[in-house]
Each structure stands twice: as structure tokens, then as C-alpha cells.
Image 1: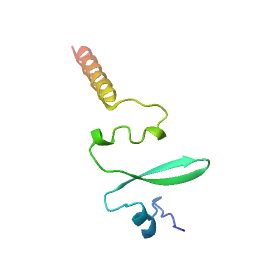
Image 2: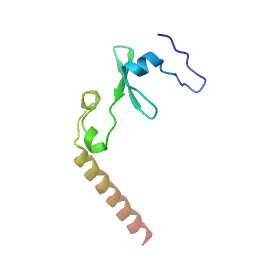
Image 3: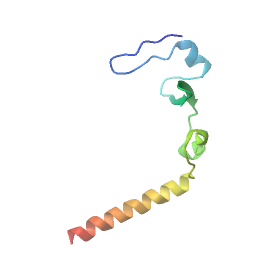
Image 4: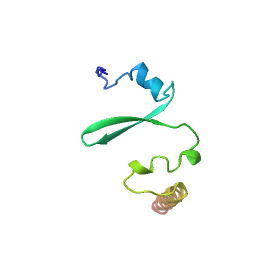
Length: 88
């Protein structure tokens, strides 16, 4: 199938493909580059907890969601402490 790229870099996914992949309004898709080709995959909808790890095969490394959240909290705490120490 053929689709033209708009000046904004957008492409309309043909209806037959949207139907086959069950892609509807507000759905998400994943673009995967493999062997010089772009593949389009449907991303299942759900909460982050339900989806955690669902794209593991495409990640360079895997980190559990709880560990990512903990690292973000630690980084934020360090940044807040740094700002507080610099302000005193």
C-alpha cells in the first residue's frame, strides 16, 4: 500500500491496515526499524502497570517499572536537595 507523507511528516495509515491491527482513534502505534525497514505495530491500551514489559523485546535493556520509578524519585530528591543547598 502507498501513503504520501505530509509537509509535517505525517502519514495516514490506510483503513485496511488500521482495521487489521485494530487501530482506532486515540490508539497508539510503535514504529520499529528492522533490517532497514520500518514496521508498524499496534500498542495495546491499558494502564502503565498492565503494559509494563510489553515492549521489552524492542528495548536495548529491560528495567522493571518499579525500579524506574524509584530512580526517578531518587533523582528528583537529589535535584531538590541540590537546589536547596545552593539557595542557602
